[in-house]
Length: 299
Length: 183
Image (cartoon, rainbow over all chains, first blue to last red; front, side):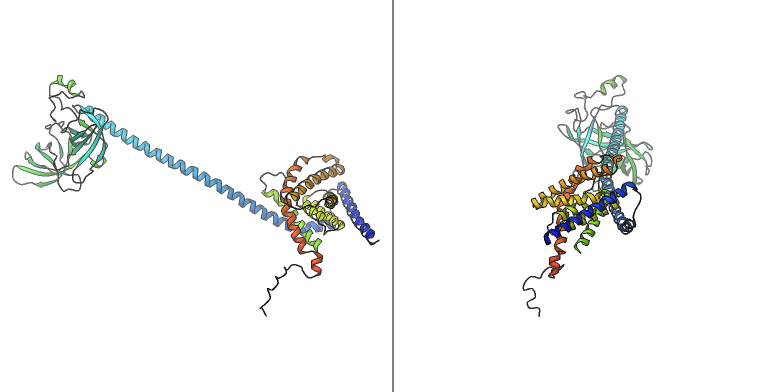
């Protein structure tokens, strides 16, 4: 009996709940905008909590959005950074290429202006030993034409002479090496002497001993090749940096700063044939790559 | 006490449900947390059918107010769902992750169908639109179902009237012998 009563009570409660729901549904269908006092009370209680939770959710959503933006910005930053690095590398490469083009153009200009057969060589090493002022060069072509003693020049001036040859690579004895000897003149005074490297110097310096004293050489005077010893005439060698002895004797002793920056040598010209004789018909022959055998002065 | 606590949790879940769309990448559907409360009271033998129906009614009514749905729509559907679930519970023991997820999924589908049908009956102009989203909602409800049902089970265990009567309310019983030597 109790069980039946219990079941009836259960059923009644469920039925009432269903009926109330249906009544509410009907009321809502008739007047969707109307709210009962109970509804308003519930909504008044719920709204602050809903607003607070919504604001928290929005805040979290914004934070997540900002984080995502940050992630995107980070990715974009990485891309821009790598692009910047690539562009910097490109710029450096372009500058290097422009410099190289300029150097080669000057070298080409020198080659055209020098009345002697020359070969272009690329410097691959310089001053491997501090005791010997030498540079190592590699020929792009013309292997076998280079002989020891051949002058080496750049647009800036005299570099030195070929010391040893091994295949397509050669060793240059720089003009600043103590064993180097180059016949030079000081055009302003007309004085002539022998340029030698200064032994024991840390930098690249050389000196002229026994400069014939046609006139008093001064600091800053230009020193050029005399044209003897295989070097083309009037090639710049350097400038007088110091007058060491100015005695009343026949000779002067000068210190010379080379015009060539040996530390930055990259391409040089090797003079494989001597400058032509004043005879105008000899010009065409002298500009050929192969020096006439037996006439080379560098053997 | 237990009904009030369950209703409070239901309210929180409903509010949470209204927030889910803030986070959702696509404004499609949210899991039906209210239905999971109904599912819990319907499946649990600790709840009588009338209590389950009352909680379902209250949850549905709250949902109607929070969601802006016609008042009584979810209340009615949730009562029906509580009865259906109770019917299922008499024939099937819903235990385990997979079964709870599957039950949540199916209940959500059925609930969506009922809601659309009742809405169409009350307001024929609305038609049967929205059913396309029912599988997505059911899928989300199925995903969240086991976790929410587990949470509500835990809450039920804490607020069990039988336990409260014998003094085993919120505190866990101390292990035997833990007080030895303290005097």
